[in-house]
Length: 224
Image 1: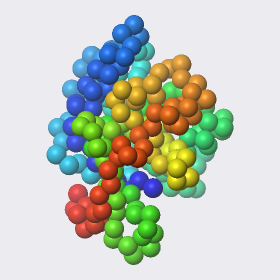
Image 2: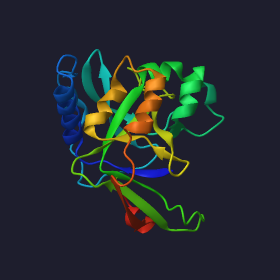
Image 3: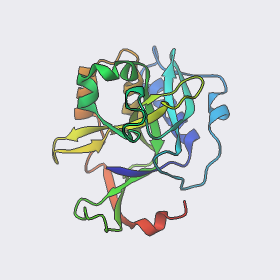
């Protein structure tokens, strides 16, 4: 499961997504919300490690316009307030079959442009293990993670974002639903149906050998 996200150049990811949409679908491509990027995306360090309950820069589509906004990583649905910790991940198959998520999957689909992410090493599941695996793309450019979020105009305690995972066929494990810029914009289409979302995960999600994994230590993340 993803422990940390590394996000640095939000403007690069925002523009990569916009350009890919323009190149692939000139008749129905996304536009840019006036001033949205400059209003919501602040300069960041070259390696910005984001942990649960911190704010991440997310991209969404509203009325055909792309906009960027800050959302807390960790969603607290109203029906779980006080009974369970914020949700940081949501399996795609669960979201697809439960009506509880109807509003979220209709209005809350977002993308997060990242350099990569850290997760616990599969061969070292012990709680005392200090080893993490850093996953990034073998290609130049950002990776786009699919997410679902509640983001109210006026912040309330429920607002937050969860990363979407899917069942990877080769390993039978839940993996982050990640895309290139060319494929990611499909996730934001307002007419996306959930059988199409499943097909998107099966045939367009980033997988081996498109990803590179590097072992790391939790010590390198302390103090960030």
